Amino acid sequence: ALDAKMALLSTSTEYAAFADVDVVVEAVFESLELKREIFGELAKATRPDALLCTNTSTLDVDAIAAAAHGREDRVVGMHFFSPANVMPLLENVRCSTSSADSIATVMALGKKLKK
Image (tube, rainbow, N blue to C red; front, top):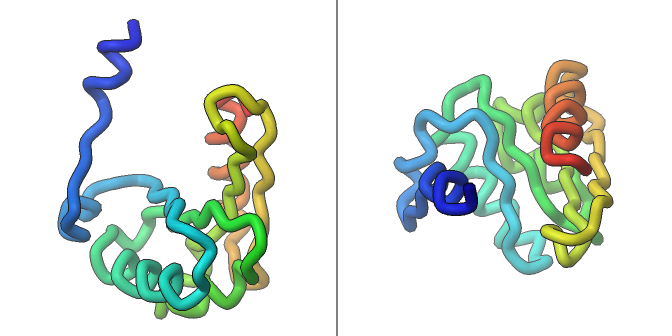
């Protein structure tokens, strides 16, 4: 069962690999500058309907969303408490620009992940 789940995962160091994803959860260290850079790139590399989520626990999600030029409605905070594979807690953070659909989708995803 674990092997089947692991086979569903893929990795890449190129933003182009995100072109067809439904959801991106960014989880780099807590640097607003770095996260804004990443969200600017993700906004260009992903489909217009893809959700762009940040795992930040301390930074202003609105400031991160502002870097996703034209995609701010698809940005949401999804803070997985550590260790994520053990802790059942997931904090979903609405941006001032997050759409209702974006919020509903991350809430449903959290339930599917048993969070």
